[in-house]
Length: 243
Image (cartoon, rainbow, N blue to C red):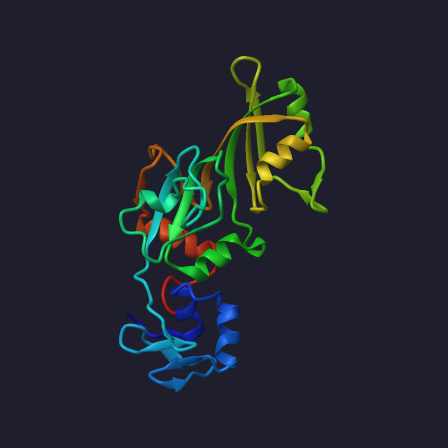
C-alpha cells in the first residue's frame, strides 16, 4: 500500500470525513506508532500503527460493489425492527458502507464501498453527481405530468432541479417518469412527485454517476469494474489511493 496523508487514511478507514479527521489530528487525538500525529503527515497504514483516542484504526482494502436493492430491504447496517438490511446480502460486509440511502420501498442501484472519503464526496451537493430514477405514477393524465415536471417545485426551502426528465404512458392509466437529479435529499423523488399531485406506485434508481444497474438481479451484487471505479474517482476529483 502506498503512503497517503493521514487524514485520507482516517477517511478511508471510515473513522470520519477528511475534514473531521483533520480536526481529530489538530486536537491531538491521533497517534502514529505511539507519537502524536501532525496535520499533513504521510503514513503507510499497512506498516504503521494508527490510533484515534487510543483505539487502533484498521484501513480496509478498497472495495466497490454495485447492489440491486430489493423492495422492503432497509438501507442501514442493522434494523431495530428486525427487517433485512442491504448488508445482509453481502457475505463479507466488513468495512462496507452505502453511498446514499434508498428508502425501504425504493429498489435499484446502491453502491457500497470501504472508502469513506469517496462516500462523502459522492453524496455532497458540490460534486453534482447525477442519479437516474424511473417511477411508475398515477394521479394525473400523462400529458399534464409532462408539463408539470418542468414547473418549479420547492422542498425544504430549495428548488428541485432535475437535469433530465422524460414522461411516457404506462399501463392501466398510469405514467412512467424518468428523472435525473444531482442531489440526494431524503426521499427527494417521491416528495417531488407528490408535490405534483402524483402517487408513486414503484420507484427504482437506475444509475449513480457513471455506474449503471443494468441487468443485475434484485438481491445480487457485483464488484465494480476498474473502468467504473476510475470514472467514479474522476467525477469526485480524487485519486483512488494517496491524495
